[in-house]
Length: 96
Length: 309
Image (cartoon, rainbow over all chains, first blue to last red):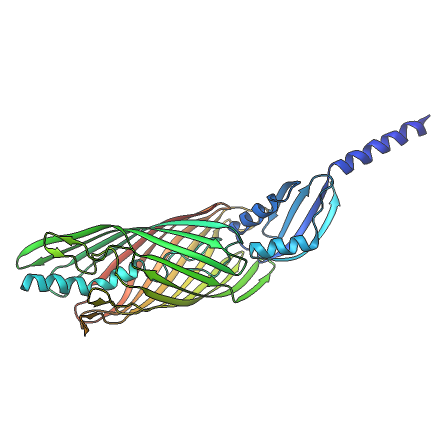
């Protein structure tokens, strides 16, 4: 009986996890003052599905939460940060 | 006739001040924390605008000529910058000026003044060198442009034609060029700039060319330590401006009472947030090696705000 309960729970948990989207941690070189962050945030907000942006100046990273079904690509980020005037170095991603 | 000559002389030798007020530098210094009295090499993002408004008060006196000249120039300098791409940025600089010259001639104290929009300067800046590291960057960017004669240059008052130092515009097309470098870290920023503006003749008057060497150090005073996120920064600023202007030419003749070299030291304060910057600085002349009876600067005060659209 327990088995029959666990399986549906796992199924719904996985659905919830998938629906929560993805968190990207982007490493950026050249970020060195508060004003830099605004231009980057503005460009990232133009991407449909971007829900939250947190910049950490000290670590030189930008954490971006995106909605379900939205993906950020290496080439897209490279161009975005180049347009903003900075240098993109790489990304890590994990489910929210 | 004597009085008229005195007015002309006073206006000519004070003209250097007008050039310094809205000359090469002192206007752009766009985003991301930057010098207050000159430009920076930091980028303007592609497709983005920024705006800066700077209020400038330029006070001069200590007249060695016996005319007891006192000149005050106030300006609201508007700057619009646009990022064409990640390397090329375009800038437009338009001052609204209020110029006033007081002097004594033949025992009479007279005041001459004019107000309105001055000369529009447009220029482009291209990032030639870009080195980005974690928490720091280094850039070198040459720039070139031209000052156009949009300001009124034939203003009159009851005494006749105003001298060049009171006119709102020079009447001439004056090209300018230079190079600016920036090294920025999370703790401090260093900027340096060399620029040259070639002034041309208009209305029988040609101001001396202006060469400038500027330096700036901005040091983060607060927060003392960074813990994460994007806190606002409070910078202490110290800048130096070495400015040389050649002698003016009037009807083809060199004016011996014009031009010279000035060195300003400029302490300032700057508050930088994600969306806007507020700043203030006072340019104090520490050395003025001027020709003849050219008028000395007392101070130049600057207050400005900048913000991204």
